[in-house]
Image (cartoon, rainbow, N blue to C red; front, side, top):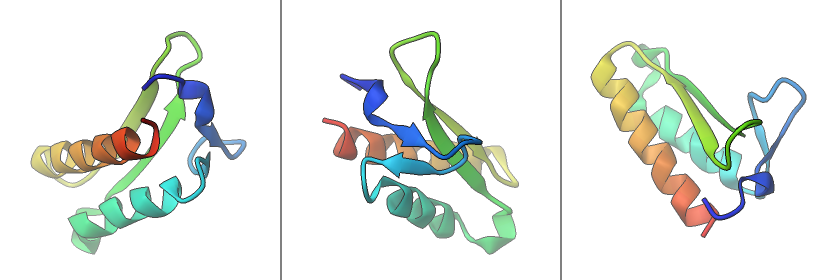
Length: 80
């Protein structure tokens, strides 16, 4: 990501505020995994490195991997 500072979050860093529309896309990625997966995910800019960190949880390692890949694609799309 060229400029991770473009990602801003709410106070607890669990929801992205900018870029506008990115959180909706992350929510769609979570929904795609399905409600039975108890999935959740968020992104935030690193405080020590020039990167955006992806945090993802789900019922299985495969679901976590799929969710992480989908969110990575959102970041690439939203932060060219």
